[in-house]
Image (cartoon, rainbow, N blue to C red; front, side, top):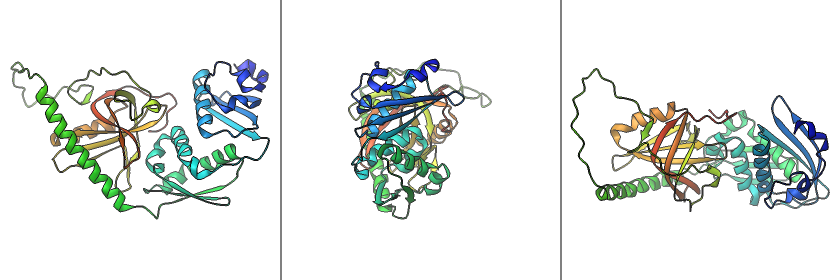
Amino acid sequence: MKGKLNEMAGLAKEIFKDYTEKNIILEAQIDNVNLFKKSNILEINLTSENKISIRDLFSFEMYLKKRFNLSGIKLNINYTKNIDFNLESEWEDIVKYVVYKYPSTKAILGNTKIEVQDKNITIYLTVKGKKILESRGINKVIERIIEVLYNKKCVVDFDETNQNEEEQIQYLKHLEEIAIEDAKKEIIEHKKEIIVEPLPIENKSNDEEEVETPLILGRSAKIKEELVPIRDITVDSGKIALQGEIVLGSTIDGDFVFVQSKELRNGKFLIMFNVYDGTSTITCKAFCEPDKAKKVVKRLNDAKGVKVSGTAQFDPYAKEVGIMSNIIIETRWNPQNSKTR
């Protein structure tokens, strides 16, 4: 590929013939291509007569990264005419794109709304995180995305003054209700299982340490479900398995932690953490007995990677799909070039 960069000029559909998805980018003209060898980033300058949506941009970047084993993609779009767009209607897709590139921002950018006044864009946060986003230059990232996609220069600012505390409290109550219902279902399922009495074992001395296994939570370390990329998980996915690393998430109080736990009215603990697998990020929840919660949280915080088996569910308060986990295993999985932790 490196030797053919100068030859890459023409319609995208003629150059990237193995890209078979329907995408308006394929009708664009590739002007030139540059590969930055040290960073392994590919830059493509193209000209288009038609508006390119952020979904098309995201899909094409994913293809290029996988096809040429790249660390990153930089697309510059030059439009031949003015294009019409509604930033508010496309904001959700823009957030998904930013979260894909910077997965630790999911906890802060989730459920945000924007206000556009000429060249000024205000992003209203539902949790505290303005300083974190600005320190990482996420406002500049969003400004560039808007300039590339819509040829519109703007200034992005974050506002965290209008947080809905009542909505956050209701969300926590909702999670508690889910925990109680799942606990009831778990009891019913356990009663259906055939109980086999364990063989008697010798009592261990107090000096003997408990043997550490990869199993962090669950009855068995055997996961039958096939691994599914997080970006492909939907509310209809049912029981699935995923693998990745734990990234920052926000608590109900607006703090940011890798793993959070909350004691529920039924005595159990609800444990929540965000997992990133290189394609996207998703929130995993699990219920844990009180005597095990502290150890589970510690192991999740120390884990280099996790493999999770559970059921995909839509959370009406978070307004996204999450995973109700029943098995969590520590792994050595480490995404290439990941800097999220």
